[in-house]
Image (cartoon, rainbow, N blue to C red; front, side):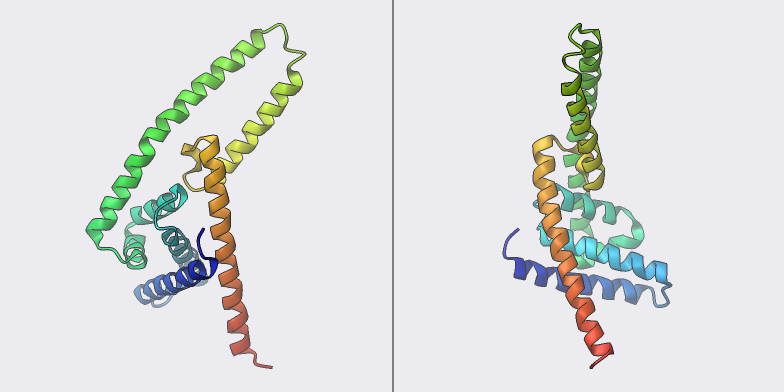
Length: 190
């Protein structure tokens, strides 16, 4: 993930910049809007620290850019012009489309394999093996649903992207904890 300290500093800088921009657009935010602003600006800032090298970061940025209200925030955090942002979103969506077809094909193969297994006379001997595979498939589907863009990834990419996403989330949590601790020191000096 690179130098952890510089990544955290870059994340904090972009997160604060994004939150300020969002706050300046909406003067009187209620608690739900403020929570949304914090999460959205943190997600975009986290994804932008990855320099669009990972698919999860591309998906987060593309999803945020689709919404008209969030488009300006995304552009501001990414320091990009509207034309570049739209091109990036289109490029990310194009990059995701071939992966969709792989998913459909893999479902067809899975269905075919299931019917072959049921017809097999060695079904009793292979029951534990099948149960393990089904458990792995269930966990893989769950992991794909948790990772942004994960539903379009194969197994190896899914593991690599998940590890990178976890590292980024850890950095994000550490920065947020430090920010909360610092703010508590200013609010309640002992």
